[in-house]
Length: 278
Image 1: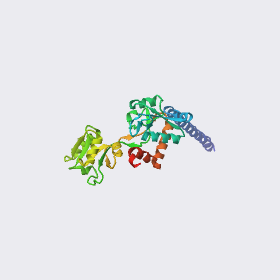
Image 2: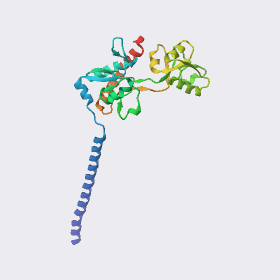
Image 3: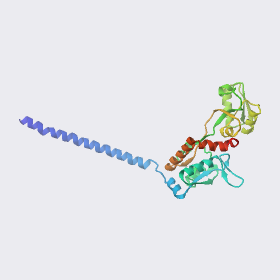
Image 4: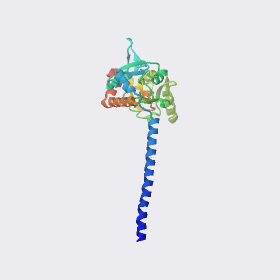
């Protein structure tokens, strides 16, 4: 009887001991989780309210360098127009505001963004990883990389593997020239026809002096009748916002996605890159 009483007496004490230890463990875990949450809240960049300010102001300030046709240029009557301008106005319309174009030299575009003189930069801007601690890039909207092109009705060259024994026109000293020299090392029978400009390289191709040409995608898509065989390099254009303008970044990405999926982006590009077909 005494032994039974002792067992009954000690059993609840053991339960109380384990229950107390479990409470301390749970309390410790809750403290750690709370600390991690507070640290993440403190370190994670918060939105700077730019999108709300845009809606209050009624304008989206777009920084650009109006000296890069057909993406942006100043017309004879002093207006700024171009492919990027149409994109900027479409994004502003999606936000329910007007686009306010801020013409800035290309070297000053990032500084204007960081100084809050522009809400977004849309100016044939290549993605640059060196700036990713200060600005946030949107999704890509145009690839301006180097491309291999052929004249209409030229089925002999369907890939870079078909270049052996052919002549390729390039602009002397350009990135296209660098890509051509790389290909020439792989195919020693490839002949390079170097020209003063990319336009001259295209002219040589169309005149039958070359079998193909390597030029940038802007030139390729602006020229009439050329067929792009393949991209040799990538140079993606994207818009950029301040690193803290997270809500604006999301809104612009949504707008760019809509433009791409609706076909409106293709129409904008066709209007400025192939005006004769528009």
